[in-house]
Amino acid sequence: MDPNTAQIQFALGFDVSKATITFFDTRTGKIGTVENSKVALRAALKPYAGRGDMLAICEATGGYEDDLLDVLEDLAIPAHRADAVRVKAFIRACGANAKTDPIDARHIAQYGLSRAQSLPRWRPSPPHEAKVKLLVLRRTDLVSMRVQEENRLKEPRNKPIAREIAGHIAEIKRRIEAIDKQIETIISLDKRLKDRKAILQTVPGIGKVIAPMLLALMPELGHIDRKQAASLAGCAPHPRDSGAHKGRRFTTGGRRQLRPLLFTAAMAASHSKSHLAATYRRLLHAGKSKLTALGAIMRHIIVIANARLKEYQNEKIRLT
Image (cartoon, rainbow, N blue to C red):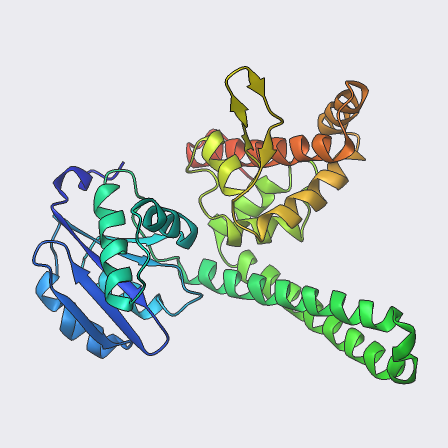
């Protein structure tokens, strides 16, 4: 918990769009709309600079919130970047049906104020980590494009343009390889990233491709507990019990980019000579389905990765 959370007296909620940002102040009831630019935001938020008794909250909007978060950091205003799914669930629980930018800003502010003590504060990523994340996200897009083109290549009706599609696939592969080299170079120049990547690669199933992707997409690894790690990765089992009925547990939520990575890692680990392969076989012998067993291995992988990075943070693991 942040040491200043007990002092939070009011919140600023921000509804972010590409061109404008609407904000709501729970203390004064003030509503305002400003241009989504650093100059306009700095002028509007300067009166709040350095206040430790407030919390600013915005949703993740694919990058449109970046200027806002930079200004909040520069003005020393505590901020939280909220999961849009959680905010929408809060709004539904409030019974709200109307939707406008001012209404959304008010609900976002109320969401933050009601949870001020538990919401993690936003911190800017170090430059190298930010660059790696951008490259990882771009790589993910290119892999998706490659899969789409490979599927098109298999369609009989596309035979007349097969050469053109194959050429595009080859170009995408070259771009993916170039990005992999850029990621490797950046990590090699940053001791912390280099060490964390090396530690992740000691976990069964995590190789040189998946390790930097986990570093970029889940920077919290090593700073959270095992339950939080499993939940963020979408690997935590959720019960479906009611009265005497004990339903089948299921996994859901988490960051959507992580599950495919962990599934690939689990597939590799289940066919390795590691203890996770033995765990996988034991689950199958116990009657679990392959999908359920792989889900358990995914959870083991992310929990082990988190534990080893936590040991590194506590200097129990020293790399030479």
